[in-house]
Length: 563
Image 1: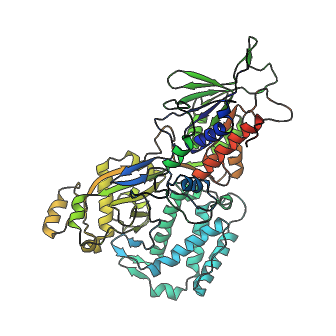
Image 2 (image 1 turned 90 degrees about the vertical axis):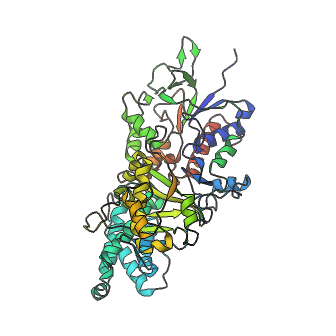
Image 3 (image 1 turned 180 degrees about the vertical axis):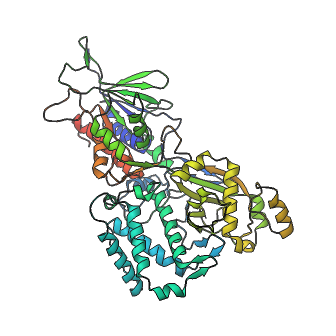
């Protein structure tokens, strides 16, 4: 009887899973050395990559940016398959807006000369935390203030579990203390009920909110300071993919034969075998059996010699909390500890399309600006009562490119989850109220008013008496990563109390090989995904690298030459 070919099953058809399948198939699968299969719980490939269309534009519901193009494997693939150019407009096709309009609650437009020093301070604090060399400022006095606050913040760090949130606030306090008191008095009243210090802190908070979407940490006080410098960015500009991020996945999957990827196959349990010195369970009644058994939601099962698990860290966290858990027997304590300590957050995107009616009425108006939004802090008694709390925790609202009628805002943490639960009407009402307040002194230019057409009846009567038109939206679209059972969040971060070592630990295959116990069936369970890459976690290229890593691990195990 001929020996069975090793069966490799990959759980998840996202970037890590499809990359691993692509590598294994091209290196050995096409030579029929393995039985290869990808099982995906959802109805599509891509995982946390999900290109869509909205308002006639191509948008990304999930992964959006190539973070640095020099050395990026994602950028290389995009170039090879000619995905960086498209006749259809796409999200952020003109990259980041160069000149955002910064507006404070109450409708006060802020001069860039006031905003820039705080923005520069925040950037230099983050650069310092990330181990980047500080750029020299042309303003010697301002530069000296920033250097002093960096040194003071760094000295206050000390050993122990310091967070990015704590470090940033120490830096801001040091900066504010460095400002001459006479200077403070001269500009104590900046705009209406805003004074310099309160406004500076609100601008700083805006940048903190943006940073939360970059990292997925709902609270920057949970983001570890010491691990931040381990994170690696590719050099060069950051770009989006004209034909959509999904084109990368589709290209990688195109080499796989039909039927290799099985959709709608959600794994509910993974049975594997720990080495215990006894007769291996893989030998039953004199016949060899495969050491791993997968159980699916529909009640079916599948055996495998090796399983590459690429599910999100959020799914792994749920899997170790449930009883019974995802793994049987349970994962070893070192795995459970790493999964528990690492951070994993929610980031959602909100798209809003301006209605054609608004466009017709606004032919002579300035196009909707790229807004940076400054809000009073929670302790302030001057907050507008109708601006919802979840809007106060976002930082920007911008067209997805310079001439688009689609606006985009990012949400992280609690407000991202709140967004998922809100009905479209509540979202449009909250956004419209916020926009009106911020642009209340510029309604003639931007053609906005206090409520959208879906708000209470007072809006229409007020519109009629004032002669101004309402800002109207045709439709709304939001991502829902937090409550999607296949993801339960967006991407990982190194939380306070964890470290890069935990990312490495998560990447270790099972059973763990030691000198005292060599398993009869090694590499039963392998782990890939962005949360398993120490220096590129939270990114698509981190997921890509992890998929290659685990594919190469198996190829090396079977002494395949093409590694």
